[in-house]
Length: 237
Image (cartoon, rainbow, N blue to C red; front, side):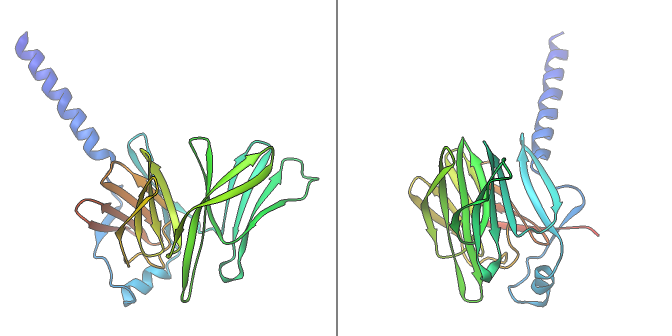
């Protein structure tokens, strides 16, 4: 009886191990490819692609979705929704649209609004622009007092931020060319001048303090923040 109990335990542990091992793996229709040199022919092909991929960590499972590129972002809140607009070099704005359509949208802020997030009952938005020689932006917290909005810049970036995710009190942020980990008021630049410049990161999936995935135009990057190893994957077509 003891022998079977040991065998059962071994099989159970093996199944759990295999399940955990597969959770953060990319779908089978993605294949690792060589990371192109910036401004090479291969890099320009990625930049001009119409394929964009979003990544998410759902209960420990890596989810990858093909998405349509958007120049705006929205977040439903009590009494209406926040609307962020980004027109590139022509600017943008952050608006509040009441559920009462008779009320005109309220302009909260001018600027290129890339993302609006709700995390732990707090609202954040990313503002940034990368155009020609300009690349800068910031991470803001938005305060709502009965639809009277104020905001505060938490962090300024000399490189346009594009996607961020919070995980265990840290902010993981992919900018136009760089990657940051922010804890409290301490900002650490982990990667600089990476190949995803002009591939427009749109999402980050964090699995632990070291392993993250970045969704972007043309593919998915798997990033180890400890070893500084980056792998790039594209969908088989």
